[in-house]
Length: 321
Ligand SMILES: NC(=O)C1=CN([C@@H]2O[C@H](COP(=O)(O)OP(=O)(O)OC[C@H]3O[C@@H](n4cnc5c(N)ncnc54)[C@H](OP(=O)(O)O)[C@@H]3O)[C@@H](O)[C@H]2O)C=CC1
Ligand SMILES: CC[C@H]1OC(C)=C(O)C1=O
Image (cartoon, rainbow, N blue to C red; front, side, top):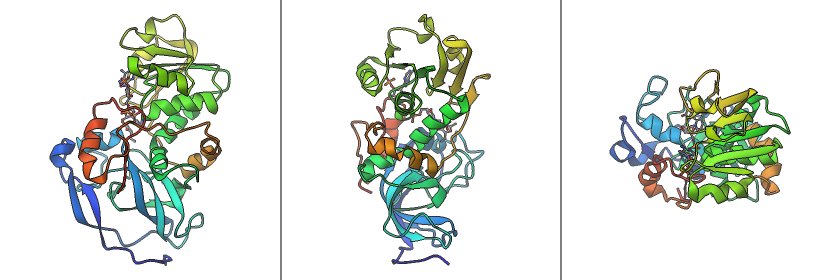
């Protein structure tokens, strides 16, 4: 049986969509959305304090992954930072009152939860969550999980090692900025190059990029330097092979991927957040938030529509909920 130390509401405020389309057409706010009342033994119920949005939210809303999606209606949202209000009977890591964060969908595109994080409450397995670092706000913490865990997983797939060079295609976004930060602070790359538009080149330098490339003025593949790893987060896996060393690798996170580039969909793990906690606590890794962050709960449609422009710098976070 779950330990229940507080009265849990039967209904909650939540954004949902019951048909596919653009956020402005299909996303609705329900003040009385039914909240699942049963927790599995390994799950916790979280009072959502902040939730960040990701491109997968608008892609699924448009039906891009409808073949693998759960049946509609769906409450969107993967990333959460909040407070534990109920724990399942087998939960060991967390107790009521703990401040936690994580990506609530273990597989990025399969076995997805119907009830996401754009709600006052959400549910996740304890293995997907970590204790929120005390030096990060809930807004900052909510911005981290999916983007950081994706960025990190690409280095694992590439078997990246210290002293190798990397070119990041798309360095200024949610995932790209962490690819740069991880390359610099964790994986100790010998040289980091990254692409962005003119106004974002200084951010790339601040994050640790040695060679910022303005893609509005030059093509990365026309430059002489080649790299041990080209990490594509914008969907240029085909062009990437012109910039990789003969024995180098290309990793991409944008479908369909271009073999032999390695395409992957992230697996959410609280252990990644725990392992990287010291980097956040020391300031070596830092959440990059778009200027529009925080966006109030009432403006989720505007927030997702903005993210859909693919111009966000860092992460867009919804707060307060
Ligand atoms: N496979 C997986 O597991 C995952 C896949 N993804 C996918 O990865 C992609 C990136 O996700 P995310 O980082 O959250 O997206 P964002 O919306 O945060 O990316 C926005 C950024 O992309 C940059 N950008 C857009 N076009 C280009 C370009 N041609 N060259 C360089 N930079 C560009 C923009 O910079 P500027 O304004 O300078 O162009 C902007 O700062 C999405 O398609 C997403 O669906 C994300 C997470 C997991
Ligand atoms: C988290 C889902 C991720 O997987 C694919 C293929 C994307 O485009 C995503 O955003």
